[in-house]
Length: 414
Picture (spheres, rainbow, N blue to C red):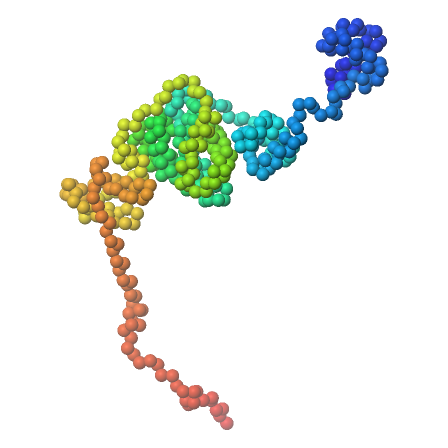
């Protein structure tokens, strides 16, 4: 018996022994007097089993029809076997016009062994409040993953997400998580939104110099570009600190992978063309309203040429007395400099774009240059032993014949 049935049994026993009135019993059990009379009559007729619910062991009148349940599980097994209950419920509604609640489908998938419920993890980090305004803080991160599920190469998705709204402002597929990939995603964000106030990243070597020089700390290429754009950079001390982008990556690794599969995409170019349309639907579903409706993005004041130069890798080189520089084991000759005499022993900037094209700049102006041919390697220096062997003209040593007296066996003396 359940607890409520045991309470009913206690009340029925008191009524049968005339220790309680029917109106008092009705108030205690929250029933009407007529219901109490029927229960008492059934108790006197059937005993303790008369207070047990008649619905026990019978199927619910609100249960799913067996045909609907079997059809839903068949579609999930054939098309959405690795989908979560929420996403599978959306696909069943969109693709198959089958309307089920998420909890009903979750229980069906758990019963069929298609889904294992996740245990809630203990929160050990205090939550941080969202920034109030859109564009005040953008969390960035790279997510290496098998996005094409073996149909194409493994790659990395660079994600920029706003902290106030959870709006993914920019995303870009790249072969690896590198500086050029972040430059491309940042340029996409600048073109669409403008300059944010700050970027929030982890402590990857792309964002933070690992050289231990306390007097003069180094600066990475990404930090140099953010300084030129007047964007603050904040480095997180733990993955939980930038949990917004971490959770977005986990959601994308579940939903975007399946969307790429359904669209038949298996290469980076097609995936990058697919991203804008997918992110529009994603943001429509998961973005939230900020506490302050203002957009604090600032306009980009740099020209397109200046922006292209900022979002490239830059290296400093010194010009020698012959107006040449050395870069990546190649020698480049600067041609027709404006100030020929003053160019020697000056520092110039080598700008390397994502497609590996080079530019040499001096005080912000491009200089004409040409690649010098590699010098021929000098011939190897001969050693003294090699020279002696080459100059040796003495005749070859004579080898006696097999019947020569020197080769005859010695005859023992008598």
